[in-house]
Length: 260
Image (cartoon, rainbow, N blue to C red; front, side, top):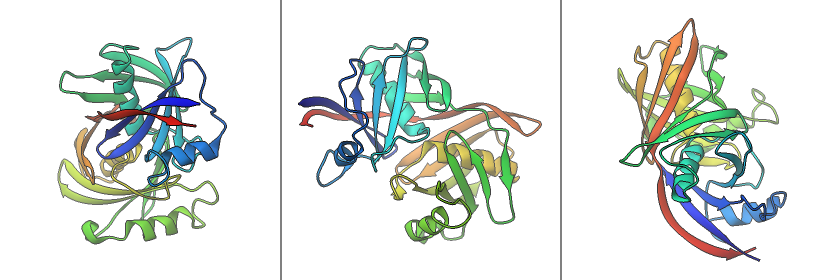
């Protein structure tokens, strides 16, 4: 069977998008999904996303990591799926959709920037070495020196597979402060098991963590990721973060068909 796919990227985080409103895609075939995401034997992507019908919202997001397994929320993937939904004329400029972590609101600006509302965050674990929270996916955040030359894959894997997070693991973010409102980060993503050029839930976690640690007092924070720039904004009251928005580009790359 041939299936049509679309390729999207958001600050270098790339995804295979499939319109599955007719429910024709073999969702349980993890080996197929991993092959489609493989950069040598398939299309190549950090993840695969299905756009499906939902009775109460505009659409449903079903996300798989590049290892073929269904995973937790992906922020940049969500933003790219919103752009995909607009391309398919499923939505106009504003939307509400459902994902594994609940309801999301999003908007597409005239310049193509997609703003995605993330989940509220109230539970933040702070230690002398790191901060941990869930922004739709679990994230470990720590400040490091010389981020540019830091061995993200080796050190990220060591923490991800270490005793701290057990079998489930966590995404690992390494951060450098640039100024009062700007931070650079590099992320090791579980499920990809490597550094990716960007991570939306990771950028969200870093912005909140830097505010919690007192590294910034801003509620709109610029994040330099390897694939570009993201902005995270939020409201904060009594340590509770609400109206959390992840903003950045979401760009169509190409479309094609592949035999599955």
